[in-house]
Image (cartoon, rainbow, N blue to C red; front, top):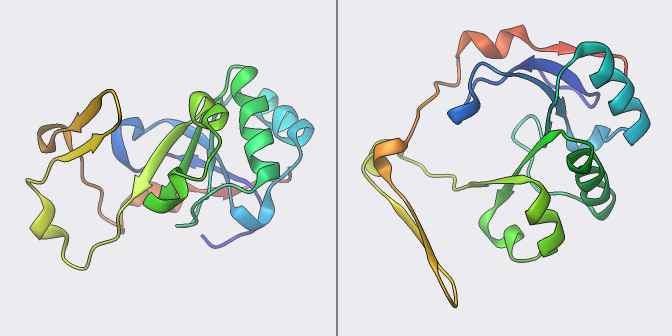
Length: 148
């Protein structure tokens, strides 16, 4: 579904697969009040910024994401790797940031682990805990636009 309006659907990807989610496309960022109103009516507490293969957060979206997280929502956003380094640390403390690494041949990466090395520590993401979703997954067809 290609839309600029928020919509609800069932998460089809990753470890949160199967959870009801409010998806917010980049072009259609809504006000905090409208998202809270809709979320309260639907009883959904997951908000996903960047639906439709869009990544990153504007400064307005950063403020909105923090506000939602402070109100108890699980807030998720996809980023390209360089975008993460430009985000304020305050935002990263409040959201689940998903780094997207587009590749031409996914088969090459089935057994690849990722290691992030910082000044004082490192994080190792093992290929043993990976999940895979096919792009024609039936869960994508359950998405519904909402009047937020």
